[in-house]
Image (cartoon, rainbow, N blue to C red; front, side, top):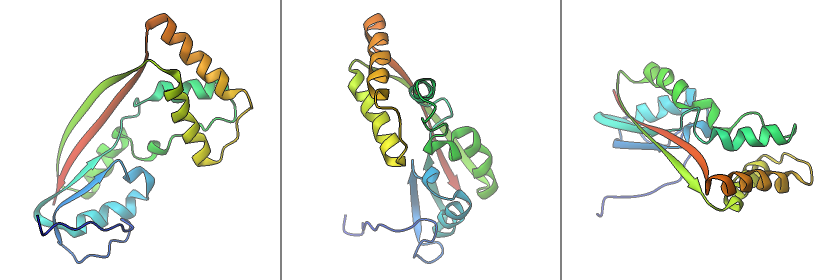
Length: 168
């Protein structure tokens, strides 16, 4: 494929002319930006007859992982990065920008057998936000997950992610 190029850019202000692309992909990223700026840009650069593919997560996606942190520490963030553009909000937000939307939801569970993977994920969330937690928070978190793993042989994490195919 010679006509494929990759470019890193701010998708709130895309440096491309109107109707430049047949396919525009925005997978698991809109919740990191201002959707009122990014969605009009994604629509603008997509061709008539083309589509904008968007993925996000549902409000229940990995919720138990965060609820445990909230129970264990008052310093734990009460909101998640994804909360600004979860499925339940995306349904309404995308409808404001695109007249045609197809939606397919993928739901599953992740069965984790090593608590350090879950604790590592939570550590990355906290450190990225530069949020402090008590010294023993990670030990408590790991103990709680380990307890569930001992009882059930795994720690179950619900996952749910919709795929939207939007067009003008």
